[in-house]
Image 1: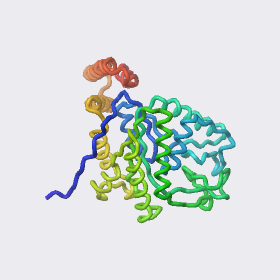
Image 2: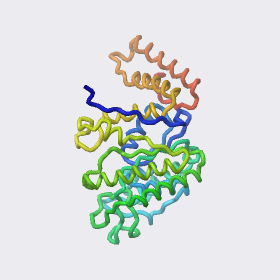
Image 3: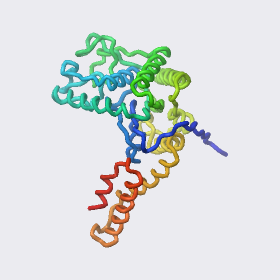
Image 4: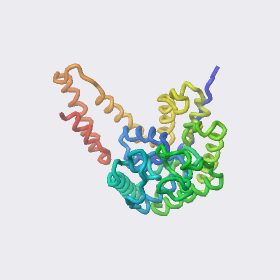
Length: 330
């Protein structure tokens, strides 16, 4: 008897390959998939603002990249011995204003130029709940949405669930602005399977429903906008706590790999899938720990993979294999 109902996501009509430049934005699940793309030698820029959960923050981040917005020290606030931006993750905070400004502006400038040549943007939305800044928040315009709360006092925020109409409008605006800036961009939306249970069980489902509804409305309205069902694969296909991490909220390693395998089949072309198998072999060889690094056998092992990499680099000049080549050359 089969106790597992599996489904296969719809294949993209225009699949990703190794020649493409990919920009990934959104929740922490974005970075799980992004790290795997990087490991398999795709050209990837991940979360230039850091992790973003809600569609307001995603829209504002995209607009900043398009405009190549430059922030100043006046855009920061001081809390818990650090300087922070309400639009950025804490990885962009600094112990000095100069440090934070430099990190943020460098990342935005990189994203601006990368977006000009981007082939596919992958956006993972986590929640339709937003935290609007109150009059008590440091250096903030009341009503603006915080991308990260930076462990600020609770009375600095007003929690609100975006309406269905607001989410649809936010996504439509984001898509239109991306297509205006780069008409050739394809956009893949996913919904994070991570449940935001601190909002409440019912509240989390209301949030996910709003996001799912808006994403499908966008995919039906725009060309070159697609949906990959990461949320459904975890919640409806796997639907078991044995695929959860210890916190019972985040997908574990097995679940993430399952979604990744489905993503590869549905979204990456066959030529790149074959190339990924070769790259997996290279990665396994790099992780191999020899008993004797100076032995004749190990030197022959390194020479074998050095030759393989040289051949791959000639055949696929758009791959960045310098680090791997240098590893086997030493």
